[in-house]
Amino acid sequence: MNGPELQANIDALRELVQSKGWTILDEKEIQSGNQLLVTDGITRIPCSFFNSGKVLIQGKPGELQRQLKTWWDTRNGLSSEPVAQGAAQSSFVEIPATITAKNHTGKPRFGLDESGKGDYFGPLVIGAVFVNEQTEDRLITLGVRDSKLLSDNRMLELAEQIKAICPHFVVPIEPKRYNELYDRVKNLNRLLAWGHAWALESLLEKVSCNLAIVDKFGDESYLRTVLKEKGRQITVIQQTHAEADSAVAAASILARARFVQLLEQLSKKVGKTLPKGASDPSIVVIGRELVAEHGKDMLNEIAKLHFKTTDAILQS
Image (cartoon, rainbow, N blue to C red; front, side, top):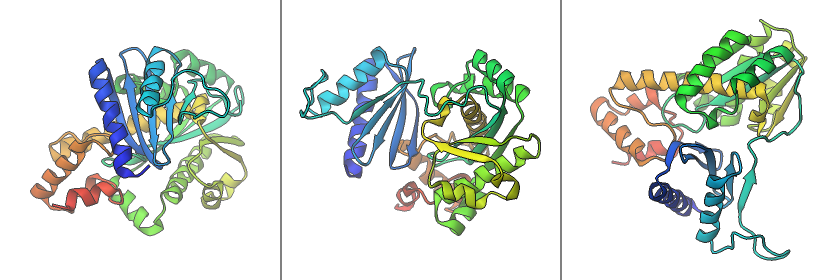
């Protein structure tokens, strides 16, 4: 699937959302694609569109997820009913909300996750949280889960509660610093590894622990290479869908909460609301307005310059 086809499918989903009276709470660029968070006012379903053509529908199975599946299958000329072995298969993949890769429940551990990786405007933020059996029970009672499934208001509330319960450390990498680092390493996964290592080592100064769970973002060797001696002495497990682990979910909430707060501060600084994500057409419009008012150097202060969005903004 090329770029225009990817955008066409995203635009089609937007039309579906509008026709159904649903809402897109968030939209962001992810590795090899884009993700939109759709809600019908009750359930929130992350819909990920990949350049490969695969569509990943996450969240709790139910009516909203069923309608999204039917829409995708119909759009691709496929039956939404079960198909016989060997028949054409839909690229729709259902992922339950309670994915459990490897269960570390009850074990003292660090959880790490990042936010802002797919957002053009704003910082990259890495959160690290320590949990044990007692604090994990409290997090579960609070309703801690993957930040993508929470509204901003609820997420900000939970972030304060998590900080009151758990040892934690948050690394915000402001856009200007982010761009300097990216220019140096030319690789997002290496930059992420550096930020995760910083967060993990800083939390190790507060708490002694021999296990860390990280949402997988690239080759494990990236993180292992940049960890200092103390960090290398603990077991670091990178796993996909790690937000199912309550420690990682808590870290994702702290990271996203700080991202939202810093994005709001940047919006006030420039006098315009800076959208989340990377594919919303308003991002290019706002970017061009800011460049016209303040010059192209302004983008270095508020955005991740290696995104293709920068070229779109500067084309005019």
